[in-house]
Length: 208
Image (cartoon, rainbow, N blue to C red):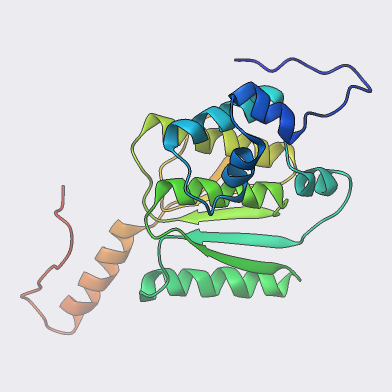
């Protein structure tokens, strides 16, 4: 549903407006915004839909649009205990630090709702980039929300970066970084062959 443009001078929508449109209480809207309280999926969907229709943003985002900057890069990942994500996190943190930016590490534990809540929070805090690493969920509702966040981040001067994930669409303003799995496998196998190995085992997901 397209948003209606507001006349100049019209008051910005408030959390009470969101609650009224969604048919829920103000504390329920606050819980959805916080992202760290249990809220029924249907209720969360109603609140998010009302926010989109009203083009509501929390005060932290409004302050950022007024000129404040957090100089923050958010790194969103399932887990950091394994070496794969840890190496990527270290690279992001080193690059962010070299440019005078703070890198925030956010873990989702494989929960798509938590991931969406984290990306929304980083949008509200006006992070300069939100880097999401790892597998995505093949659900249209999830992709729709990520496309919405990509557009919202782009409009506020930020950027959604998808690392090792498929594109959200040709016209979606997000940066996609692909892994060179084929090149890596070729390099490893070539090295093993060059040192005399001929029987090489593969441990991992099914190929093809």
